[in-house]
Length: 294
Ligand code: PBE
Image (tube, rainbow, N blue to C red):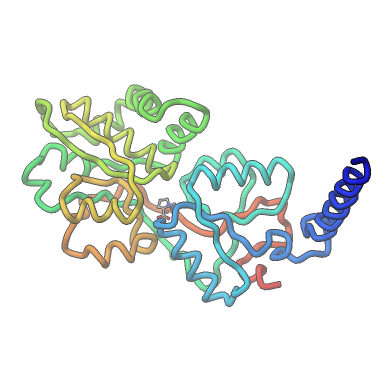
């Protein structure tokens, strides 16, 4: 009996010892690839940034690397875990996002421009929506805000507020902005509107805010959370009315091309947004996607 226990302990110690030797994060001489096991921490598989990351791995010849899929929240959870221990991590990141105000992060340079430039967030509707719901369509096309505005809502949610409460607070506090979005729009009487979105922190914020504005105008608003592909499909087949989550021209290019002619692009809610690979600034030797090759 005693022998057996000793045997197990010895094996356990041996395994631990081997694991410690094999753990590249403990080795200062390890390359960044060895440190993160050639993994980029990604989000939901349908996100445009996931496809862009796959393209980057090809274009930069990073054949040993891959991107793990999960969700926005699993990605930020992994980021927090690594950041708290000052461990290396590479994530798929984007602006606007609260993570940049919470942590010191930097984008990896992208000399080949795989992640695109001059990206914008567009509002799209199903065909025929403007005719059916002209008042709501006008609000959707007049909706635009700054990165700071969105940041306010995102941070409140991140700090534990319910998305619809954070949106209501924002609407109450920013009457001037809301009156620009609702300019020339009459109230309605319980007309139904279905907004679709993906659980990206930025889109949770925008969709809840616009949902609240429409509700205050008398609409009966439903917010439906789906994946990126189904979101575009719902707009194209008319099963949803609108989405505030179309990132163009690059991030959702594949969807925009696939559904060309089957949706209306009614407005730009934010300019100067960005996607890319992001690392904590304490990863001093990693500044460009090209550094991942070393
Ligand atoms: N994002 C946030 C999305 C669009 C909005 C950058 C994660 C994407 O990659 O599709």
